[in-house]
Length: 177
Image 1 (cartoon, rainbow, N blue to C red):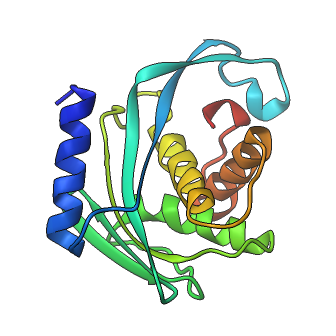
Image 2: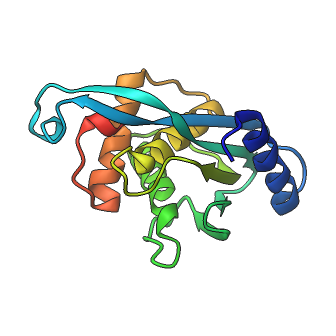
């Protein structure tokens, strides 16, 4: 499904089915294509990426507790963690991108709400179009939208890169974010 309105409608419908009620926030982050500088960004080289028309979308609402409940439409899988426990999820590896962003943001002293969230994306996995970075950026934008703090785009991108490097364990450069 590529129609943006239909994708959002499906995401919101699945959120309602899984969590009850309507989501308070819907966010999206695009994938990207490298125009110049592939494999130089993690060596501080120059890069020229461009956003593409594929993205990751998240519909979410805050929770009163420190629990993060996730559902991936792509994997038809749920996961849950507490904001005080950032153990990796071997059974739901897609959720590690969300966990990593939450851990890095909290490590920076930023307050995060618990949340219920449904995720879906149409960025092809493993195609070099930054599907993982799209999850991370959408997650960071989501937490920012549900919180009382604001970060500049480049700062948010660096924190998402750290989540992928330090938590997920992928040595990516900043171009992905």
